[in-house]
Length: 395
Ligand SMILES: Cc1ncc(COP(=O)(O)O)c(C=O)c1O
Image 1 (cartoon, protein in one colour):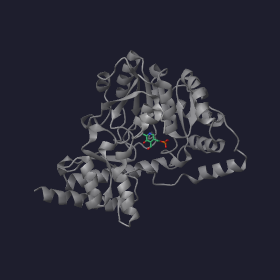
Image 2 (cartoon, protein in one colour):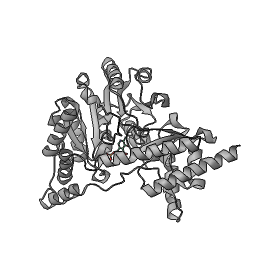
Image 3 (cartoon, rainbow, N blue to C red):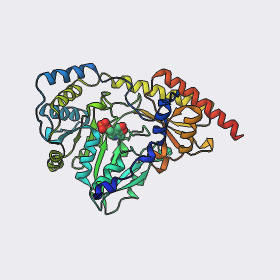
Image 4 (cartoon, rainbow, N blue to C red):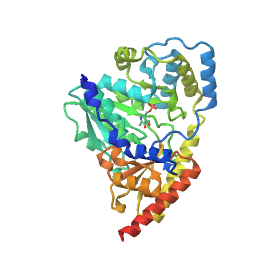
């Protein structure tokens, strides 16, 4: 079969990343009692008022074609929301709607990078970033995220990796998998580099509404000096527990969204008016489920930290937001891959090896905090018992 450059560039992406996840699925299908903490999905259903709005919208005949930018009502709601959140005047024309953050990322990368370019991304990183960058033809340049810096990307580490080929810095705040949030000072320093080297800043803010008590989220979009170079991508997938709506957007300078419009039209020919109606309501009314999710995930992260710190040599990094916690496992004498397989087989808990997210966290695993209370309590017992049994074996 003849292949194109893009299918070749994307071939083989991912496979090994999902080994533990796939193995866990197999074991569950065979009837084994596994606590599944690899992938994180919101632990509540999408709010019923949004479903009702969607049904009503379908009944009202909102089944026609839309346009490449997205429905006017949704774009206006998003412009208002981001203007309020950032204190900057964001216009409707700065908004393009996409089916989810993932599609928005894909389109945005096609707009800021191409063969010969480099895109700087913190390592560890969300699993699909490599694919969207490679699809554009550009190369990913990983920037190590250091646990001693709270896993926040540092301007110094970025500066060391900027070359004449660098076209963009892709930030994730709040971050997946580490749950870190960039501070205003981080954004100032990174913004100064972007200005000095004329770089785009893409800010993936899909977890912005899942911020834990005591932490503060700041978007680079709120810095007026960066107005010409920041592109935010986000969706209702996490904020409204609605990943299946596939409803997201990008917000960027008008010159950028204008330039990207023909690409969006070519790819989508517009998205679905009834989904836009549900999303408009979601944005205008705010989320009825985000605060509950944030407080449940924060409490579970804290219980994980307390229990494992008190009873084992595993080290838990406390997240500031999101759906996940990271555990450093080198005290077990295993790396993250070995530990995750061992924990699955002997401890009956499935977690993601850190290596699925990058080289920097080879001795870590990521745990989803989204399982129900009973399963979470069982997982705590099992991870603790497993770690203790390993300590006995090591002595
Ligand atoms: C950091 C990050 N970006 C993007 C996505 C994809 O979001 P969406 O469902 O809006 O495509 C996820 C999903 O887990 C994510 O963790």
